[in-house]
Length: 532
Image (tube, rainbow, N blue to C red; front, side):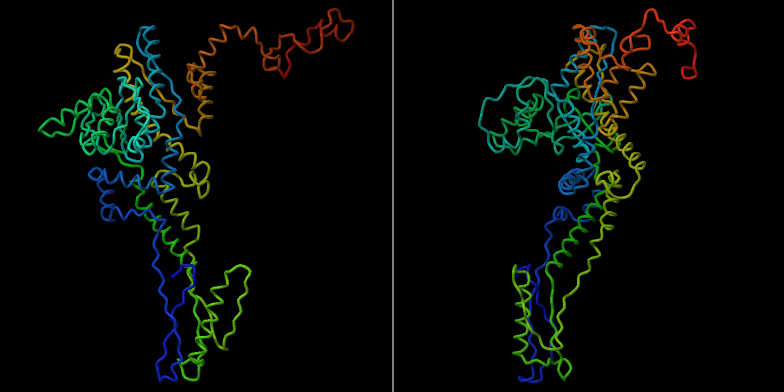
């Protein structure tokens, strides 16, 4: 039956007396069951018991938890906003800090660090690691410094198009290769850095053509391990990777745990409840759009027996039905007559569920579980400006805490594979600055520089301008003599009180008595209350 049509339903039945007095005419219709097309359909993947078990034991159920988290990231707008905002908030303004005693080596090592960072697009790597860490709980990478042969083939299969990111990595000197979380695992620590192992079964389900291309995109260490594994009778499918070339990020977990916890872990129940709540609202909306209208015929002398004959009931029923079905047609008028005592009404639907307060409460609960005030995400709701500012500072502190170990991992890899100078290492430092707090942070760096012994480099970097590029520009301007060639306009900001430029010209031999007396007494240089 068309869901856009009113539903006719049985009003009642009358006890039959005989064929002549059985006047009741009834119509029967079946309403179609509501099927949600708006929900997350999470329960198609996991039962409620499995979801509860994931929350209680995330380490043992990490793979299923990652699948669930990715599903929620695609379906829950609030969760998506939280992850995306945390990924985008840090400005990732940075300074490179060379260490050691040799000035020449410090400068050359700093240049190597800067060049490598630009080659691997380090800011993109940091943001990718943040996003994966929040959604999956972990992020793994292999930094390969071996130049690989460029692929000259201009034609690609559907499989190759799906892996376009890895294809673009061909032919460059340094590349960061993401490792799949389902086939990579933390197996230990070395010099306080996590050691990764890679599951070679990742290549097992590929055909020969895809396998060849896939292997070419992976580092030599993994390719050699696959060849050995594929030709060996002992199927030891896990290979420990060189710790000096891997980057690992793990959030919301203990040091000894192998996996991190996704950002949504504490909010799963409320997100699921919100999904169920929205499905219920959609069901209620469907009921509103599929109105049930009923007609009660006038009662005769005998209770439960209509005063109308069967034919009269049929005619009146048809007239009312046609009028209702045609009432939504444009430029149409519906008219019908009914017998005295006839009642026409509809079944009311409770619409209190559509109250905005219910949804606002759900958003507040989800936001609290995720660490966000919902008013920060939606721009509406409860919460003062001060409370929002404090919440934002707490969020930023957590995000920068996640960035710090990723930075140490990148620094480790570059120092050990590019710089290779243990006596003159180079550090990388991302300023704890965000898009929202940039103005305040720049003011802090300015005050440090002007009022104390602050760093000009840090001040420049806090504005978002690359400090090395800025200083290079200043050096070039000094060499070109910009200060002498392009003097600033004479204004109160660029002139001192002793500069005699502009204003009324002075008279060498004044004749005015007042002027002579003022010069003689040096009155203009006498202390005044306004100059004390």
